[in-house]
Structures are given as structure tokens and as C-alpha cells.
Length: 335
Image (cartoon, rainbow, N blue to C red; front, side):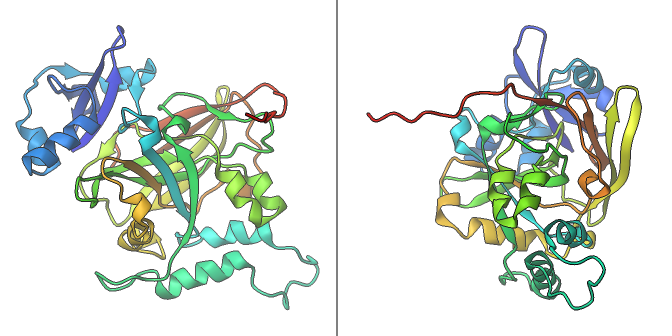
């Protein structure tokens, strides 16, 4: 079962349930957000899937047509964007260290045999050795980063904007976990979504201590929210379209079978911090990737379209790239 949020031609929001055919999505009556559905499930002390099955609404809507018209929204948001936090983890997938290692390594290419491991490779090996602990235990902690609040989330089909000072705007195809913190401060996973975490890899390559800067960018996730368990092996494709041509395309994989951390370990190391267990907050947490066009020397340009699709997600995630006009440096004035 998957959920989507959309707007009609009048701008009114509604929620869709997709079982099999996205062209025959069921529109739920009298509810305009997944956030409201989740709160109702908590209030009634029932599971979200069980609540949805009983929720009234029989009208059928073509979610594919809505996507083509740009009327699908991110599948989870918060009425106050400041209470939606976007974070992520890196070096979590088998093969994910290779591109990062190349990015960060400073060496004589003629003789690489005696060079020490980069910090990226050390972090990746830690994950291989201790990223899948027994249930209930902490494993090794992953690399972690903050991206922003709900203001950086772009809807499916909406442009991922590079700031004017950005050196790069590159896709990062990932799976994201979506969460709501309940009234007792307990993280409650609503489900999973495809995501484009989007980053500035050229800035990061200058010095890996610029990673924090490189992640303060827009992102997108959706269009659908999977409320079933994530398969262990997620197989899909990441591509970049330029005009009518496919500029770049590569398989995209996720799921625990392709990772050096369990999802539970990544979640535990995020929500171990009390400030991330504030009742009422929504979290979008990206789980990482092993596939980047940047590693293949691709330089996306404004107007290019990023496209990510993978089963079991019912619809692909597409976002064009744009770049903001040059703006003056901020001027801070005394109060």
C-alpha cells in the first residue's frame, strides 16, 4: 500500500491510496494530508494501514496524470515547515565508498600502493565490521549530516535549485525513511519514499570538511510513500535526461541486502539524540546511495531532468535542475 498527496486544479489538497494500479488510485474523503492521517492513527491507537483500509472514499483518480500535470506533492509534510527536519547518512551502501574515496584522495596517481586509507574508506570499513548489530543493540555509528527543514523540500516535478554560489548540483538517488514523533517522544515510522538527496559534490571534493556545506541544498522525495516494509533488495534506475536524450543512466540499488548498515542501526543513531524526539516533529532521513553520475564525470546543467525509479515504488521521482541568479553577499546589521 502506498500513499500520495496531490492538489486539484483549484489548489485543494487530497490524499490518494495506491494499491496496484496508480491510474486507479483511491481518493480518501475528508482528509487533506498524510500528516493528519498519521495523527488520527495515533489518537485511535491503530496502525496506519488498518486506518486507511477503513477510511471512507471510493472515487478513483489517475495519479500518473496528476504527476504529468505537476500536481503531486511530497507524500509527507508538516503544517509548519520548521518542524520537519531533513537529515541523512552516507557511506552506508556496499560500493558507496569507491566514489567518495576517489573524491577525497590526494595522491600521486603513479604510485597508489602505499597511500594510507582515506577517512571515507575507514568509515566505510567500520560499517562493514559493525553496522549490522543484533536487534536491540547499537552498532557502529554512521556518517551523519543535516540538510535543512521543510523549506528545502521540493515537490516531485519541481525544480531542484542550485544556489548561485554552488559549484555543482548533482543527484543522489536514495530511499528515505519518513517519521512522526508521537506525544511520548517515540519515533513512529510512517513509511519509505524514493528520494533525490541532491548535493554539491564539487564543493565537497575541495575538502571533505566542506561536506556540511555541500549538503545544505534542496531535496525531493516521493511521489509515493510506501507504508509496507521496505524490501531487502531494492532495484531501480537513476538517469539524467537532457532534452529528448538520456545523458546518463545507471542501476540504482538499496535495501539492507545492499547495505553495510541495518536500517534499524541508522535509525537508532539518529533518534538517540533527544532533540530529534520532540513530540509532533516530522523527520525525513535519507539512507545513502552507491550511485552518482558525478563519479562518472557527468556535469548536470540547468534544464536537465533527474529521474529515479525503483520497485516497489509506484511512480518515478522526476525533478529538473535550475540555478538561482547571482545575489549579493548577505549584510548583517547590528540591532
